[in-house]
Length: 156
Length: 328
Image (cartoon, rainbow over all chains, first blue to last red; front, top):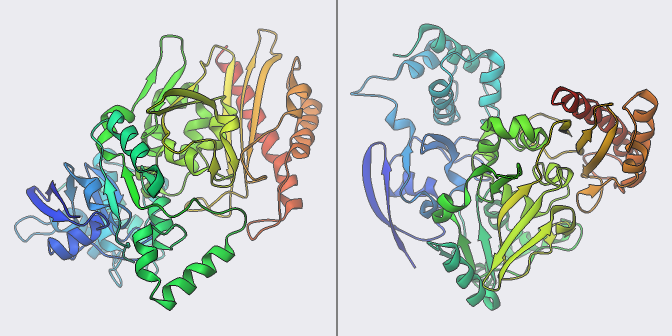
């Protein structure tokens, strides 16, 4: 039986009826039409479905939509403002931290949370923070450089 | 990878949760905390909710796949398929907390995540083994969702929060409609995935004994990689020393070297009344290895595990002893 839940997604209050077995990822992508968040492994291993739930990086593929009731969700779509990419997104492009791009939304959300809690992370802290987000293209070095580059220049 | 159809109950209070567990016990009901294991097991499917079993009985592909997974799984498997999941997410206010009690013990709510444990200065200062278990668990994303209660109730022999909890002498507070019960963490697991938790019972809090001056603890996980791995061997210890630096109490637990987290009992006699010098360390390491019953599997051979128990025992004893001296 569907349950009606209310949650905040990218600043907007959303009220939706969801099947109990529907994941937060399916809600975000299919019901709310925000396809930036990706489905990778679906088992909590790869991190490409990462969103921020009440500010904490969360794999949306292993979170039921109903578990997110009353929560504040931020997806990669929330990072750009008025058509302008965030400073961190710009750094990802500048440093070549994006190749196929599939891990990028998750990497961005995880890194965004890291920078909020620790504006000047060292290399070890960055690698630790993204250790649940897998990337098959970059070898991580460029991603680490992008996050470091961002913190060296400060918030946007 | 989509989830099958099933129903989820969302109690608003612990009393309501207990009532639901009791009234649906006969249909099969499984408690959902962080979901980092349960939802994976349902997706794979190692655990198939009843509605799913009925639906997929017409699908050869799915049932064959599922049978293979069952065959692959060594040991007694999983409870009968549940018809309901009981999600605890509305009980976060009640069950997600870290609190030092007046007697100096530490109360941790069952829904407290590994991430919260990692970030607690109190836990890291006085119950370091638990903080280090949280550091070692899964990945940052697993730690953000995975809970202390869930890690213990899953009863995997390698569980990174369970093993240090056993070493720290934790008591598990369990409720049902019949009342409150306390179970020693060291006696909680019966077999891989199997616990003393009765149908209708729910783990609500974990209490760690006080950490008086002269007490230190440590946990170390040996795995192939630092993130998203299951330990080859895990070891946790808690010890207390007196003003002469002699050990007055010690408890050492080992993970992934038996069907449940193991309490290394012979280590106690070796260490009690002693200062931690090289020869004592050696004796303790040999004793710990003799207490374990590891098996060969793809993560490591029994022989390698026995040798690594010795290495880890020396390592964690040295660390915990140093911490104990610092806290005198």
